[in-house]
Length: 463
Ligand code: ADP
Ligand code: MG
Image (cartoon, rainbow, N blue to C red):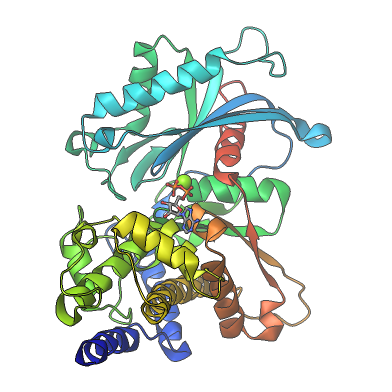
């Protein structure tokens, strides 16, 4: 029928605009490398902030004692304690808890958000059992993983540049987030010192390095997306401080804000961006990360319903609600292996209140999920290649047996198997067999929490 033809035209046009042939991906990778250089050259020199983390030493394994971590970065936050036993014993004990953040706090007041976090942390500390031992007379210390762009002024202080990922609290911007947390802990009567403020990417890098010496970069694919890597300190022109003894500095790229004319963006992406809490910002994040993939699919389905009556004579009302189609639902539909696409049918019914879809219709929906996920995964692989190029690890050097491990974390990477497989295949395809054999992508499960605790240990006031 005419409707079906029109619907397929919309799909086809979208698919073409989302195309990521290898040549385009190479342009994206090169643009990433160029922007990395620019962001390191001068403050504000690039959309990539290339933030100096003040982490110039990664964990060695010698860290010892009881340390806490708090991870705030998306829809949940985690609190964690870990007993570190040094070279011999490693991680002796660890415990964590995950608490969801009431959405109202994401756009409320600064004090309300930090009070809530500090109160949950205080509860967690109160439950500390005998498996965890604080050395007598010592204050508890915390690594604070805060996954938003922060201009650090030291290892344990930094001002918030802006919120991302659905958070929007104007009064926090420009404030020292460690001071905000410290004040909130005092209001709770919690005696604890923030010894390290780290981005989740930096935490993941630290946590990854603790267990594997070859870890040189970290990538987060969760609600948002970001990356960090180890840079040579003398290759950071904007750094005017003393060169660290190690000669190295971890850089928090804030790669979510990358943009390039080579990114294949569609009218749906432009509309999503324009209607977002942070228009014009985090453009790369908005095509690759978990907060947005499902929303992109929803926008196309909405257009198909409006212009091609894809779901019948009326547009299903639920389909018009921004962000109702979340990425976990999209991935469940995409990965539906039942012959009659039962999962797709159920999700359409439960989430969008669309029933009686034909198998043909459901197949188109799976295909849309595939297009959106494939573009995201291939573009994130291109970003990783950009980092490898900057580190000089995208080639195999004569007589060297260099191995590079990229620590990956985040719910999208962890749970969206098709996305993960596509990312890994694309990276291997771009690197070629010989180099691909030297690059390992490793899942670092909640490495950022452990990493923050490890960095709190190596920056303890008692050292
Ligand atoms: P955050 O990024 O908020 O710190 P996570 O790393 O746990 O937290 O990532 C959560 C995100 O991962 C969710 O917002 C969602 O986008 C994505 N995600 C979680 N589960 C799945 C899933 N089953 N399939 C696809 N994406 C998922
Ligand atoms: Mg996180």
